[in-house]
Length: 333
Ligand code: NAX
Image (cartoon, rainbow, N blue to C red; front, side, top):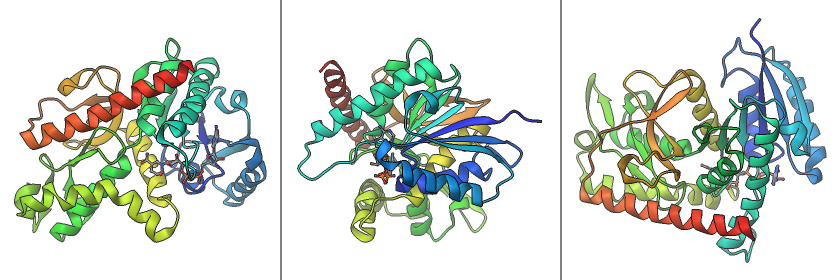
């Protein structure tokens, strides 16, 4: 029998948590033949909610879910895990400055990085969803260093990637299966660069590049980018709550592809530690196009940029460097 995978979800009493756990538990992420032991972590004030989620998961009667436990401390949460979905983070409250939010989250991800080093398997793979996701992943990786390699840490830009695919399909009157190879460069924030230069669209049986398929460069360099960058804010405006169903689905896509690999001829967007590719400073958790094979991601090489793209990538790099420096300062405070 296949050995179960031990999978941690933090912030499991929250709204993304509620949508994510069912997909992990029912085999959508790791396959229908892969048993899973789920560990749900949240803060002690949420222990009742967490217990409710555990009861619901039990009531789903899922053959792939071998066990589910609710915990409110790091040691039992991180012990022996294979995968960590780090969703829980401090939300931005009214009157809170960006640097206050960063400092609060640095504390959480510093502590969780240490807990990963101390208790998790050295092969554990981590996706950070909680914002500021890239910088939180940078901090967690820093404090797990020596025990878990930096390449096992990632942050989620797959929701932005999926949003870009959807916008391209809507614009060209195609479906998601016809559109591939969009790229999100940089930070999961308003400075991200959704890039369709290397994307293709299949229409009436013929595959063409996205620029030809859309036939409107001004749209692709203007409203398209703004829509993807600002989609999270629009969802909050409409729903009065932030994206949860789509965020959970994207996190599951991210880990599914890391586990099983990307399709031939396709890449996905993942924020991973830069190895210096495309001039991005080494170690910055930056969203790149990646292909995945055998559980290892590789940054797609050799893509060319025009001046427009260079400007966008420089802006998101600068923001990430500033966030990193602020976070490192907050670590010492
Ligand atoms: P919720 O506020 O519904 O849930 C967050 C949960 O995390 C709460 O239950 C809270 O108690 C818990 N939590 C806080 N500190 C914790 C800690 N130290 N350990 C364990 N749990 C802790 O937020 P939700 O809508 O689920 O969003 C979660 C995070 O995802 C937020 O930081 C949000 O900004 C971020 N997002 C990131 C996205 C991305 O693409 N990277 C998109 C969606 C989402 O906005």
